[in-house]
Image (cartoon, rainbow, N blue to C red; front, side, top):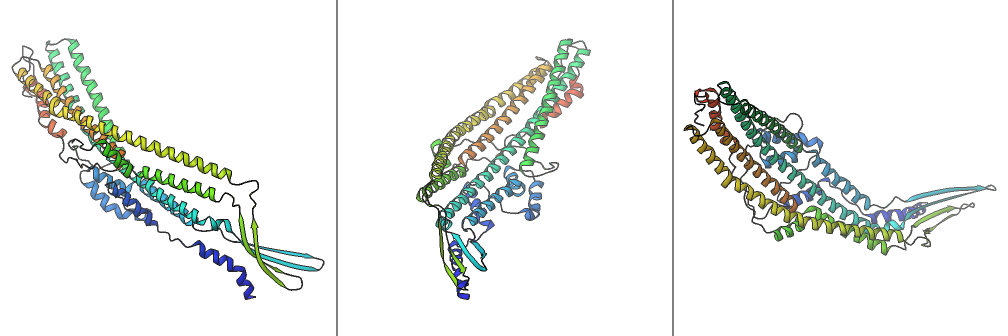
Length: 492
């Protein structure tokens, strides 16, 4: 009896040994993703599950306690943004597919009992699909290749989060600066309107001039409120990118870094992008996988479902008969034409997507480099020419006003124009860094020249420091009171 039982299960044991055993390590894919992210010169996020999140609380608290930098914001995002966990979960799903592809279906056990005319016959058998065994190697290669492709896609998603968080930081710092400038402009316009009311009461200006100053003050206040709204929206967006909830109580640095020229050539950056961008690498892997799928479909097109097994039959006289079984699907009506056509179409579509992605990358890199260069030129024009010119104009108007060559309103107008020049410069610096982030995103790695300045631009506090006192003195002390001739002296 033991001999018969051993014969029945011999095939199942042999097939089980052929299917192999694949160990599943959840951190294996994470390690490969971290290597890809590090290859792009970015700080790779650590792997953690939901239960491990509390372990990073100390580090997050430390980062948020100090004035937040762009790199600190990215680190917080890597520690707190749920997209990290979702991306790593995709790796787990792909790993599960690798394990599933390395296994063949369980053998099917059959049993039947035939009775009649006082006789009884028992038939039992076990069968296994030979087709799955023959295709096992191809399935394992496809699943392993898809797993590698998923790693590249996850790395691309993490790098996108890195760039999105960095861009959100630049926008927030810039909107805070613009909000402060708009508040200063609004305050100056309100001082002008207050002085205009005093001049009107003294009979030195017309009602039209009074209303023009009042209108300008209201418009400046509206612009200040909108700028404050934009700054709050930018702060909440950065708060969300970092994966934080609740009221954003943290504070960021008040100055953006000084723009610097990019020394890299466009052709070199395009080559770098084609070698480093994770989505391009993933697209190439997809083409290779689908090519392998097409070759397998052509190779096994005549193979239908084939089952081999062992059958054991107990005859009515007590004899036991045992022997092999074979079930073979004849390729009469279906010779795999549909599978081959589908594989060819999928391969063509994958090649087209790869070509489109490479073409778009080429354009994105070249256009991004031009945008960075143009933004740098604009920022330099503000810094070297426009801002100093407006400062000089305001200074000369101050001198002319002190000698009563111009009125107070002309001086206020020149100061507002000086503030507008400062605001334009701050926005130009912001546009430069946003363009640079987009260029780094298009390349898929930090720029080779490494030309990143750590010197901050002139901050809003430095711009507005001494001037705020002058505005207040103009509004409250005797320097803001009109003289008999309708002029006002000030040391602004």
